Length: 99
Image (cartoon, rainbow, N blue to C red):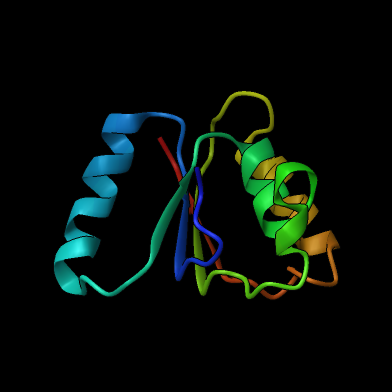
């Protein structure tokens, strides 16, 4: 389950790669709030306050999104397009992670 607030959202479907990405970030600042979405659809629901994350509709967005390029359900390019089309999330910084 994703936390209600996060400083960084990692969108990654591979648990091992997610851990390898997050481990050094945890070491930098243990107070840094990290969250992992397992696919593009879950990420969009979280960021846009949809579906199971409707309660987040007015909540602060992460300061940074690390977005895997290839994912099941909704790929990284589609997630980025949806974010840029959203007035709420259009300015959220996104870094695409290529395979």
